[in-house]
Amino acid sequence: MTAITLVRGDITEQHVDAIVNAANSSLLGGGGVDGAIHRKGGPEILAECRKLRASHYGKGLATGQAVATTAGRLNAQWVIHTVGPVWQADRDQSELLASCYRESLRVARELGATTVAFPAISTGVYGWPMDDGARIAVRTVREAADQPVAEVRFVLFDEAAYGEFERALAETP
Ligand code: AR6
Image (tube, rainbow, N blue to C red; front, side):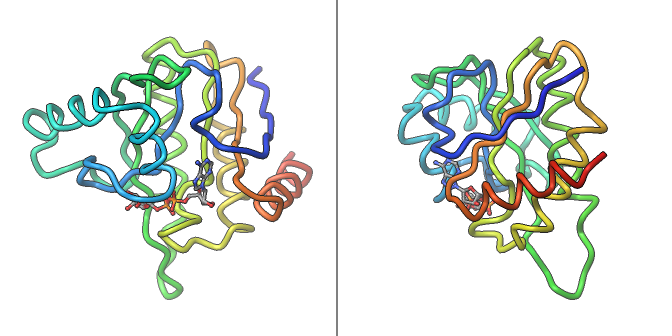
């Protein structure tokens, strides 16, 4: 059974096996979590991302998919990059957001990671409402997390995000 824990803070400060990055399909960096990970993790991460773009991911990483690199100078072994959908009020993309969590966990299991830290994917620059993003995150991780992943830690940047994840956790059987 995988434990789901909530922490308020900065994902780049976590000591875990794998840190999940809310990336974009270019894999070449950006703002928010992505910017913080590359800043603190150092150039090794970007170097591996460039190699991925030059090999299997010539067109970039598709929305809902996940791929791992080194974590550079972060207190982790791997960064798992995933691309969330951009929120659109007139289109249900919940399955794509769920896929980010599912695919990241699949990569984590393949790597043998036992502790995995997730941000609230798509809820920043990509505009997904936090309450719905939290419900999808918690539900999908409850369904998909499996050995050897012993802990999935959601790292929430502010009190409001923490509150929504707490509520989602209490509501999800
Ligand atoms: N630690 C934990 N959570 C954070 C941190 C941090 N250091 N920084 C921000 N958050 P975002 P997205 C929260 O924008 O919406 C980038 O430019 C933030 O408050 O990082 O998936 C990429 O390159 C929000 O709740 O990711 C893409 O272009 C959540 O993390 C695009 O942003 C996610 O916010 C991806 O947008």
